[in-house]
Length: 352
Ligand code: CP3
Image (cartoon, rainbow, N blue to C red; front, side):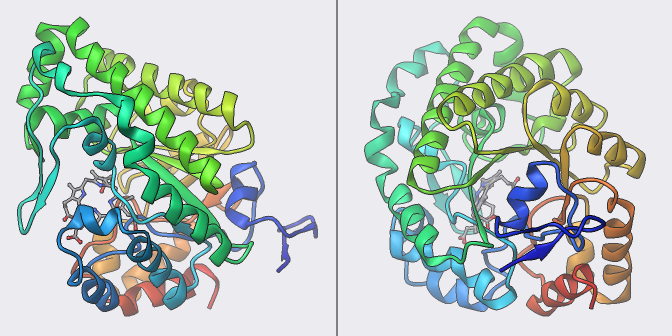
């Protein structure tokens, strides 16, 4: 399929998402949604009911493939994101991950250097083999214009789950460790960085064409700690993945990091940045001078639907039309979202 580029009449067979990440403007912008596969879809809930638990689902290639393809079939997004989870890497390291119904992830807490001994990155390739198998089949199943996105959590974000033992409100355990024993805590971040590099390269070798780093809890760190525990590891991950896979663009999503997103975009080597719903237009336009931007629509507005949704979607498209832009949400699709709202959103973005 060919897509014309606004203003220039250039045509290309490359997936629109990849072209935007290379710096092109495309009108209308390519669109995909974080958590586009998931509980808001009845076909996902039916598939999920067949799995013993969530991690089994992630490690069963046929199920992961089907969950990845469900939103593409129903809505025709411009990109497919591998169905998996950022905690798969914590599980591969030996952090004892489980997902409990109605409670979210539960992990065996890692609270000091004594607990690091039980973690090892020697098992990643074997542990993640089903994930890479799913990626290979997905790439063959998808049309060329639909880019396949691989992903991982940022080391800081994955560490929050490992140290807190699950989701957290105040991040008291991880912050205490980070401030009282930065060298020891740094060993956990280093281990996670190396594991993340291996996992991302494994996904590219299997067929992923683009990568996203989810640094979902970047926004809870003051500036000096943001630099040390988000900026430095991200730059190392981006440089290492680029050395092995020079053509594969990385999108970094430092959620809720406010003004620090500018530094993150300039200083890490990412080709695109995710924007949460609170990023103002002036900042988004400034970011577009050096990287592609992706996101910004509040997921609760997608849940609400109606004219407010379609008006705001069109306003975001118009505001960001002069630079590289990938349409997405500011965070993942919420489980109670009616699927018809997603349909209406895509139609609005695509000019219907
Ligand atoms: O469609 C996609 O976006 C691809 C699949 C995907 C999932 N999780 C599936 C999932 C992706 C990219 C993720 C990333 C992820 N996982 C993040 C970063 C993005 C974000 O939301 O900030 C984080 C922090 C996690 C960790 C995680 N996974 C939590 C805290 C939970 C429990 C909360 C919840 O929504 O249930 C999960 C479980 C999870 N991951 C589900 C899905 C579809 C729901 C589990 C189920 O179906 O039973």
